[in-house]
Length: 449
Image (cartoon, rainbow, N blue to C red; front, top):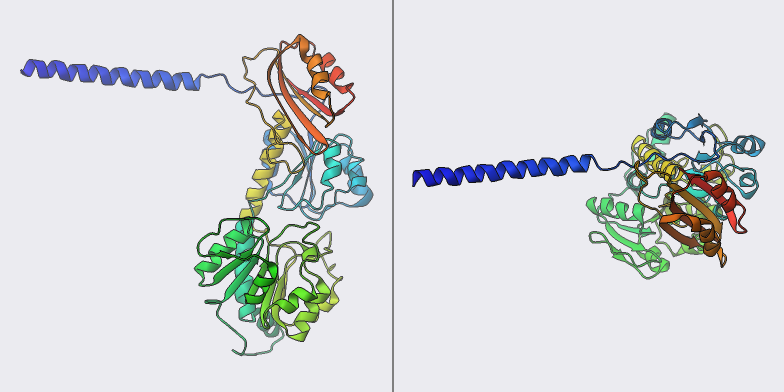
């Protein structure tokens, strides 16, 4: 009986050893799987990157690791200087101050992609960019927390009139008052635009004891105890604080004017950390000076200076308004947010340059293919951006006919279409490239190998 137990234990031990060896073999096979091939562009010199407006160091590090040539500026560029610099680069990275208009983009003959190291893309003519085959990437998520925290701070400052008290103290004036100063606990916060920032603000405000309502044109599931409303008017009528978090569109331009401010509760507060064109400045000044609204916080303006310095001179009437917090578009300007934005956008740009992946492009069909591996000999990746017209796929597949198309993906967005294809047994890359360039619908063609 003891002998049988020993045999059974030995069998168990042998099985355990065999299982361990099997795991090791599987792990070894996984490690030894074919690695993705580092692709390089045909008929393109060293990739040149131009970064403006003090883009975070994380982006520079990402590009340097790829061996790209990186040129950086701490400020925005305008006019002839911008046009001269953009002519020769493959990628430009900007924040909110640099304006890439149609006139500027038409001079950017080598430009492959634009990185907006921020949420908004309204500083770029994205339609012109698409027509020229230029993909535009942004960072829709990375600074959401920073903006939401700023709004919470502004709400408290407005409720306690801290901006005015701070200004008075700097002038040597001691003015200890409690009249019209409030806790935010129990107050109603109305959020216009319940996206990434609005929803995070909702959670933070509720944790501070506020009651949260929101209005959005989309049906969005509320977080916590937040409640949706059917109209902007109904939100304005019940809110003690109204915070704006909408993109700049035709529908949101001048969204808040004199009529909307009059619909707000007397003594309510207005906060704009969205886009400068959303609030009509004269209407805001009138509402503050009349006392109908008790205060406001404004971080964005219809017209903003292109560089730091004593340049904020377009809205003199704002400067004399009571209980008004003015900040120079710093909602997302924290070390944490800029670091994350630098990583997010630079990684998207690197993937697009190196493999053609257009996932998260704002003006472009979003497509991707699995990687070409090192043991895939004589295989190239074709990246073909073309006008979205009939017959194009037939035309390019005739060019591919003498080769084996291993993988192919095509998608369109408006007038632009994008084909990504991995072609095997290609020995003459130059002829393949030239044949694609000569097609009637070609906008931009790259071949990676």
